[in-house]
Length: 164
Image (cartoon, rainbow, N blue to C red; front, top):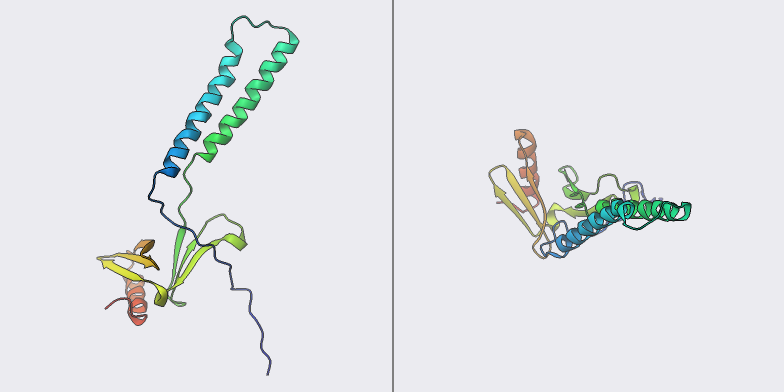
């Protein structure tokens, strides 16, 4: 008798909060955008500085300062964009819910994996199903318009003991 390990379907999960309710991220994004606008203005206004001559050394300094401020401005503006929300995969056959970061490398693609039996709470309101993880942490809200998919998901959740 032999035993083999199947490492093809195993993924290392990275636990991450899908929603942050404090304002730290918002304040940081506003500061980054203000910094980006300020650096863009520096890049433009360095050419309008009064009293500066048109010698080659001064022109080279202005060009360098405006290019560096423009690149930093673009970088700060890109970092201030909100992160993309993770995609939700509901695997009825495997009876699990997966949060997946789209476009990430294969090793860090799966943010979180939770079996239906490990869910803390599942709320059903019409076609909307809300999944809550351990510690009353919101994992996902899913609205299904396909009746067959909705019925099979409800059947799997009832089999796991999460819906009455």
